[in-house]
Image 1 (cartoon, each protein chain N blue to C red):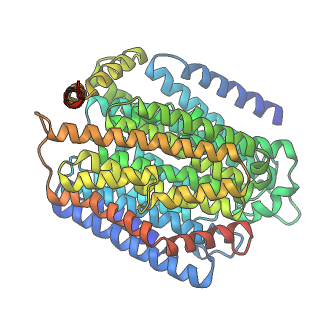
Image 2: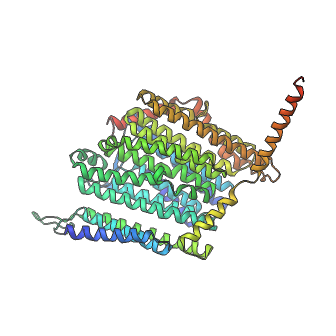
Image 3: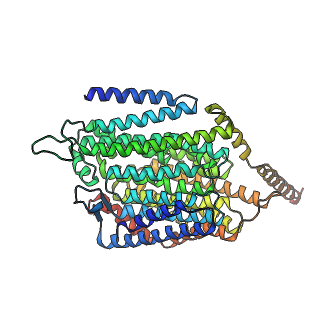
Length: 459
Length: 145
């Protein structure tokens, strides 16, 4: 049962690699496979919700020898999120006609990588799945195949390859200092490790994941790439792939390096604040919608960092809730800005409200969780900063929306897209409103997940 | 042995980092490959131990760590694949820009971002300004003199 979603995706991606993805029928096959995997993952999630962490040693090896698949609630939340984002982007692109033979197969390969890294309990296996999703993203950025996409792909590959190498060095460091690759054993061994090597390893891993996330000093690649790629790919990068960064920071930071994370909380808060201010100010000054969203993504990462710096069950729940809603917002917006028509415009409006954190849209609860956290930690400066950041995000989202209306009603308005194409982002936007109206189930699951990680109830 | 390894890793990493600062894309990729190989060596160095092969250990003998070798093999394959992919992308950049110079690429990027600025922005601004002026005129007309 644990291996079922991974199995579906692996065989599906290999099957799709042999088929011609530009044909409509094959595109829909890919959507169906991803849908099946999503259902299987959700079923597995239900099982974990009832029975706690699931564990399995791969290949019939004994526990402690074979590579372990271990999945808890945090992992399943991120797996479902990534698959949902990939499914929407793939559906969008299939409706809009896929332009490259390999596109559906690559999306499925990325789903394999993202699902795998949330399922694994082995540090090196994490790296392997991480690279599977990164390599498919390297090729996906080229999608569209014009000079602009090649430039974006080059920047993306150079920076992220360096990030991956740093992560590999970090894993070698962990193996050297603890002698284990199984994450549970690493966690047991970590307190015995001397302080200096542990801090060095933790820093390397932090930098590696911050590059993926696009946190402030490591953000420089992000605008070029997000504006250069096709909208469906930008949605995949910001909605699904960036989750590697958050999930990795939770898995390695909170789980394996809690001591170092606590020591670095001041640094995280400073970087987070810088990210919020920098991303917000840059986003206000930009005109192209994709560029506004790219800088907005840099700003949103800052909130996640601040919540991570506070730590604890409440902080961790805020991190997960914020990254779930941020991914959904970005997917809605990237898919919405590229389609034209009233449905897509409505989706952009809902997504914009969600980024700004206006009730009754889901984003409100993400912002609310952060306010709650900052107030309960008695940090008036941060409360102010989060407030100012929200106001800035409202300003740039409103500007973006106004420009869109101006262009759509202007003299050279782009042609209206197919209804079904607009419906993809609109459906997700409705989902955001539903989350905003009935947030209890999601918040409950996320709080349980956070509690299981911080209080060591599970793994 | 540890010293030799650390010297080798340090020089590979330094050479790679130096090459990555060049403007030529091919050198940049070469630098990336060198840094990747420094990481591979680092994995090997993470468990340096002399011993017999792990496939058939004799009782009482020290066993060499087989795990690092498995890891480094996987890492080599991955870095090889990504290096090949990166070279393909450099080739595509070359065919579309007829240059492998970073300066030319950033020039092209700047031209593109100037093209992105939506034109209708100016129209909207002036429309709003005209509306506001008309409203002010109306309001002034209503004021009794």
